[in-house]
Length: 399
Image (cartoon, rainbow, N blue to C red; front, side, top):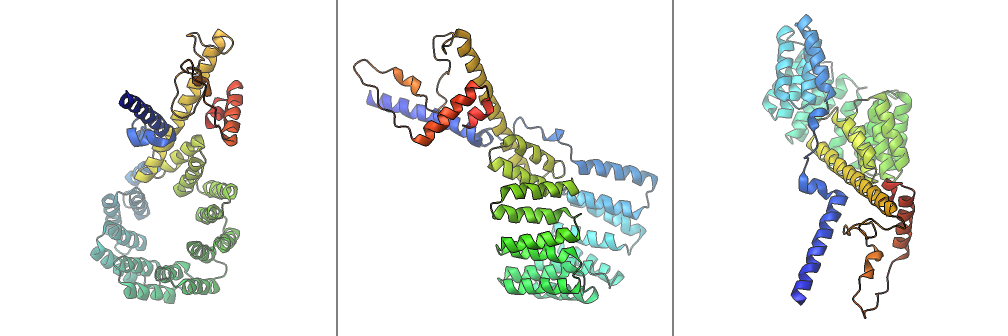
């Protein structure tokens, strides 16, 4: 008999745990992305590809269109198709600087460093006074952990274009990786002195400060970048990240919203808004912003997982609210809070909340155990009852 009682308790606890997992996101753990149709979320970059392909039909030798198509395919992760379009552009114009740079970058993304280096060397040879190819080549050497060769390319980039801020940022990143914070700050400030009116320098200084957790200093630099050029969404996004680290959630939301207002395609800003709302339990807004992020980043598996989880939590909350509404309507239908089946209308325990009304089924001769309810729990239960009586079921579930 004792074994049977223990088995029943274990079984009840297991059912309760399953219900708790379903309410707190276990839905995704058990059921994956079933019920989520990602095909209905149109990746707007695919629409852009279709548009440029139509333009290409009318002007098949337009190298700008070919490079833009390559960039779009690169963005969605189709590197082979991107390479195909860059090569087509280079067949028409072998010295097309954009095509050479982007082709080199595509090879590097694919891990084909040999072809990446050859292609970027061609870009340098064709346009020796342009800094972009030097920086991209330095990035390839950094990826290969050939630090000295990378630094040599970054310094050449500074020599040919002292006001190009990305070159200083690449050197700063090398210094940050080896723990030289002061050196990273110094090189960025050197770039700012070369071109004090360029917002990029202040943005990169903000990035350095954020990486070393000097978030107030980072915010100041992002604000300076925004003052100089309010059209760049990444400046607002950087500020939003600093806001989050400072527990300034309201300001972070505003910063990410501003990023989206200047660039609706900023999928990272939309994703971060989804993260904030998901963290705070506002799954309706989390789903909204994750979906927006997916419209410009539909192949990101991590983002898909976040969207699926938020959808599962939202649906579970809606189902709970609906059941609560039905139970409330059922109890009112019989009057005096009694359901038509003679019960209290609340149905069996879900394993999530403990309803003391079910304690009345004590064997005769046994006294009812004294409730030990903490004041906070009692307050939330009373608040839930209040919302339920007002038919504010979403709020009741949260309470």
